[in-house]
Image 1 (cartoon, rainbow, N blue to C red):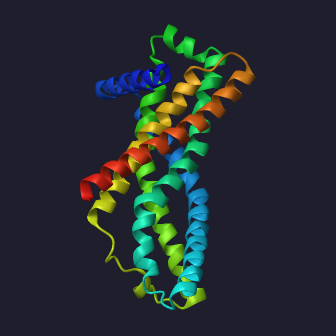
Image 2: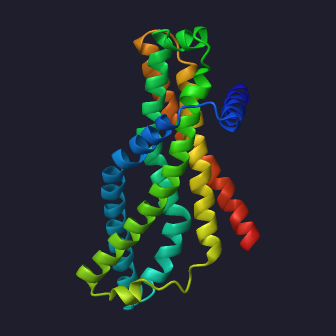
Image 3: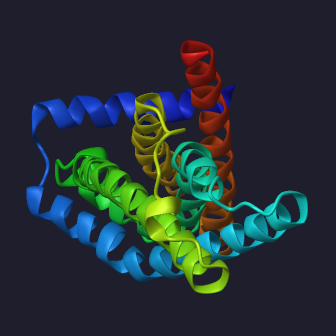
Length: 244
């Protein structure tokens, strides 16, 4: 409970600083670049192979049960959109972005840079947290959409190249509902807030020394991944109950 309280407190301070508008906008664009452009290749490769492997295994199993693959695409797209895509992208961003935030802020704490900011009249939350939360929130949604699209395209490619499934037959949205899109976007927004908050709190609470920074980085990856899993469960449950 103490840890959850720390997350809520940091979130409140960040939102208050955001509404005051007292933060460097250029740092926001820098964070968007770090979170988005530098994660693009990583997410593209992983999600493409995920789509290829998942669709290949599904087609093989379908052929063993019924000699009909026209249902593979329509059945797989909602799963990727609603569950698989957002969760995998969130875990990838937790490892890359979360570790980077914790290591950077933890290093600034152990070298007394945070204390120097306070002495000069600058709130570390204003300078460090608001740009990171804003930039990562925007780019998490964008990367989530990109990752889902790449996963579907990877599945479409292997279904056509290996099993002869026409892309027009694969990309059928008969089983996809608008609620699937809203749930995916809700998860992306929640993950975009949770990852920087949890990772930054780990950095702010790091202990002195290089070992403390290392533990803060590890804690950021574990806690942010766990937070994304919990949020995924909560949002999925609410979504299924709301849509029947």
